[in-house]
Picture 1: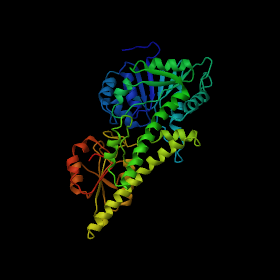
Picture 2: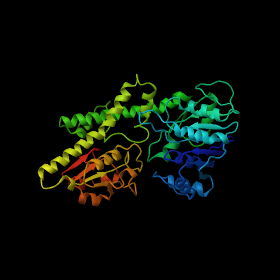
Picture 3: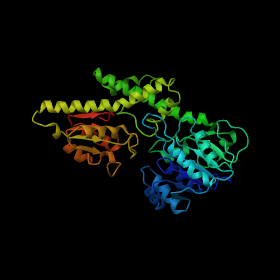
Picture 4: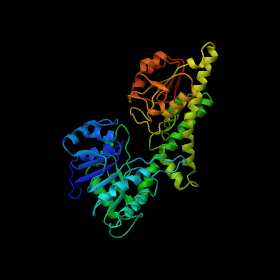
Length: 426
């Protein structure tokens, strides 16, 4: 296990799906880690050695590091050798980035900063966000010399870097260690300082660059994924219009040695792929034409899915005129934005379920094995049930997420006449 003379303590701002695994992983390397969050329930849960989110292996690491005294959670930041900011970066209603959480985190740590400290922004951010954060820190602490522009030169009291997370939910604890990390420094010394910290944890290669390139690298990765998913989603709608099985079509096309079409779904969700391309568009709207088009295709897919469900409801009404529309029960299988996790952020499946609940007069059934209660947007509108209950009571199955539990029950689901399968499980 690598050790560092410069880093004995770390404060992590934000204890969500990235911040908590990051804090726990560094604590497992025997750093004294203070995790900070505004959610009092999350703080109390962590200090009991438990977790408030679903992520494989995280519970074991949190329990052991809290028990051993290396990890604790707090509502306020403490002085440390390094600070990692891992707070949300959503966008506003006009698709413009919202940096309020980053600004709040910067203002919270500013009073405890001291000469020689390292501040790293891990939150996926639009280009220029790290400089914006640094300028805020400089305003709060004019007594410290802080680099505030990309590729700064000179000597400074605080080291500023950007190191975007690039992990896959469900595999975070492994990928935090194994994946390469892109580290952008406001100065070369800032990048080297951040590399020294991450090398305590990361077994992959730490690749150094400037701040803006590091910010754009993460956005590029997710925009690339978004464009490819958009092609698959657009293809699924075209194939449906032409009465072609899109799953067979993609399977045949992928037999070409240089073709790898992705699988379509009900849209694109999660805090990264569904959000980050808009950060590129926000900075260069006249140039990001393909990036914008891909976002629009993926954002439109949930409406197409709702139309398919509407057609199935209409067919049932036509075949059985005695059955009123309000007596037709739809069961949504899955709310998470991807398989086998509990994360509902920017989930097209959740948005589809909410829209169905608002449009369809009958009570909606929801099957989501990774949550214990419905989100607020579905309370009083739907009922959370298990697979057996849904199969027994539903007239239409809407398969939105390919959870492992659903794949295991594929033979039973296939028996339904009315199934809208957006993930090709059947």
